[in-house]
Image (cartoon, rainbow, N blue to C red; front, top):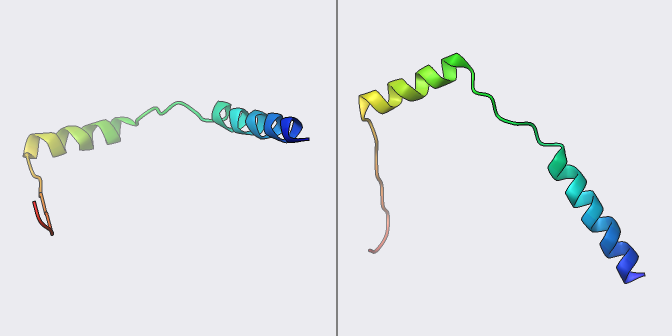
Length: 50
């Protein structure tokens, strides 16, 4: 019974990983990323001890 349940669980997990689509950024997204990199704007916050 444990082997059957484990096998079904593994198959379900494997099936969900196949359902993922590849990421294809839009031209607007690529332009926004490049603009962000060109502006060199960033904030580093650290609320705690070193």
